[in-house]
Image (cartoon, rainbow, N blue to C red; front, side):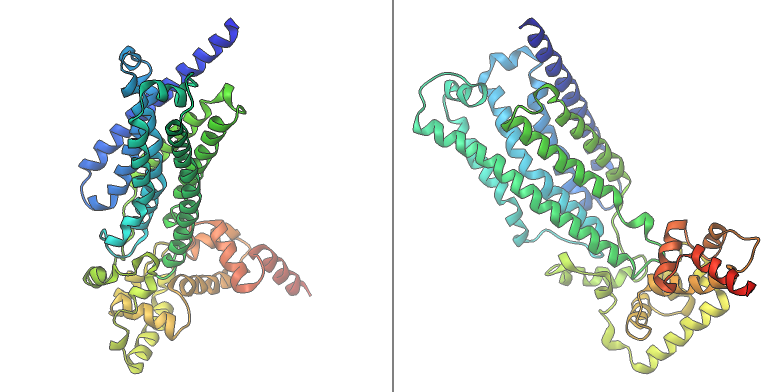
Amino acid sequence: MTGMVEETSIVNNVETVLAAIILGQCLLTISLLVTKKGSSHIHIPLIVFFSAFIVNSFGTTLNTFSFAEANIFFKYASYVFAYICLLLLFPSLWFYVRNITSPVFIHWRKRDAWHLIPFLIGLCVAVLVLTLPDTMLAQIFNDGTGPVTPLLIVAAFSLYGVVVMWAIQSVCYFVLVFRQLLLHKQQLKHYFSSTEDRELVWVYGVSIFLLSALLTTLLSMFTSVIDHVSYLVDILDLCLIFTLSHWGLRQGSFMVKSGTDTVRKNSKAGNNNCESLALHSVAKYEKSALSDTHIDRIAANIQRVMQADKLYLDPNLSLGDLAKAVSEPANYVSQTLNGRLGSTFFDFINTQRIQEALLLLPMQNKTILDIAYEVGFNSRSSFYKAFKREIGLTPTVYKQQMHANLRK
């Protein structure tokens, strides 16, 4: 029995230390986000996320102080609001991802308020639970003894309902975040020739950490599977907070770097349906202003600068760079690529790079990696993927077949 008590004490101490670290990191990150210059509106959802985590971690940290036991109501109130603030985590992450992936400024709209409905329901439950006497609160949180009244049953089931609602909400927003990231990946292809460093892969990790923390929390609440390692939840939370802090402080918003003035002018009007707004839609704002003759002239200029200047050899080439080279607005160039040449900017440039690579592959003194870098790719994997899509073979197989044919 003594061993079990000691083990429980160690687990509680570990949980308290981890919660304190999480609390400190959240406070530090919020202070840095608040004082960060530029695009402060983008980080508001992130500040809400860290604030919710502070409330969630506060109850665990509070247990180390003696006044927590003296003020029972304050202790249970921290528990209740820890549950309620869970309902803000995934929605705020979703709004943050929406902000950093949108090509236009997204202002808060009245219809966005429905995202707060679960949280508002949670607040109503919190009011109901915290109006109970301390003895009933002890029955709910500490398995205290006492009569089971209808009010107690309603309050307990309401609190558990909040947890279930949080689980369902988290899964739904998890899907929304992944869908937005996939859309963002497609959007990038209209403006950049290389997307690896812009695909927000770290957000996938944050979402998985958050969902894993959800699953372990549910296991600790409703089963005894992880009782001896209940601090696993706090470890996942710590990984989540440090990852989100690191990347959240570094990440800016995704804005079209060329033609930004056009985007900003249309941002207010675009707020009506900007959740699913793709970047190529921005390029169509002035579509009616382009005649067929103008499009033909832009297409010819694009082909000319590609052949003469070989712009595609620049691994960081963007739509803005190509637009500057042909002396046309970026949205005109994008429309020409999509409408006349039938290709996104990403695919068009990478096709040019593959054609250049085909000329270099016969050279015995160049490795495939050397060729990949020489023609403008940033990595071996992106070169192989583009080559396989364009030619139907990997560069290695193509080179082997080519040499075999020469021997014949």
